[in-house]
Amino acid sequence: MTLLKLCVLTPNQIFWDSEVEQIILSTSSGQIGILPNHIPIATALDIGILRLNSNGQWFSIALMGGVARIGYNAITILVKDAKVR
Image (cartoon, rainbow, N blue to C red; front, side, top):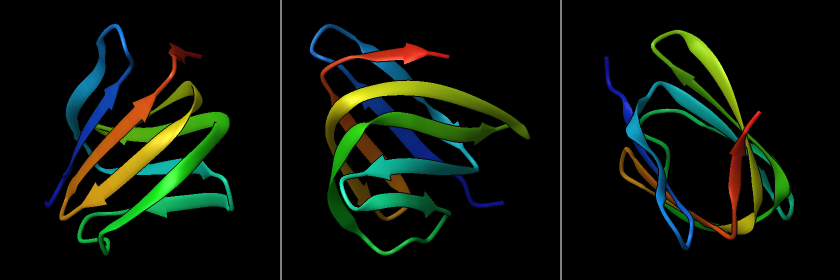
């Protein structure tokens, strides 16, 4: 199974760095779902919830705005702050 490499960075720490099956992001133009082999994009993020599926379990992380870069099966998210919900 192809996985996505997800890295969530804040100014103070690497908040999340592991492989996930899928994510749902709150962007400035609405929610977007990312699965493996998604086309590369860059997007601004609103204050909202990042939902991620890792090992069949869903996690929610509150993001305080930022940007996301979706590459070939690799996602880098830069945010002001992040908290596990």
